[in-house]
Image (cartoon, rainbow, N blue to C red; front, top):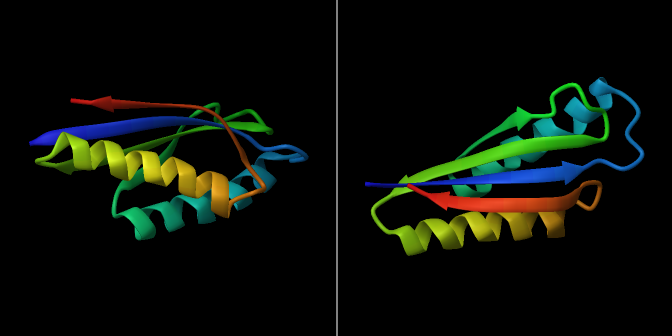
Length: 94
């Protein structure tokens, strides 16, 4: 069993409240779960209005597949959610 995680730092330009942040992140996380069949959650910077840290995780028996899925998920965020900017991301295979 191989576990893959990805930490993604996001910038939410123009956002002015925690309610606005939730309105952006909740649909993003739901779509990531549905599109890539992985776990997705906000894992850091919970009190910041214009930044967020989300975590993605998946399990399989092939580390190459995990890396490809997580990398595609990050690219998908960049392509399909122009309201957020991916600042940094890091994949870890366990």
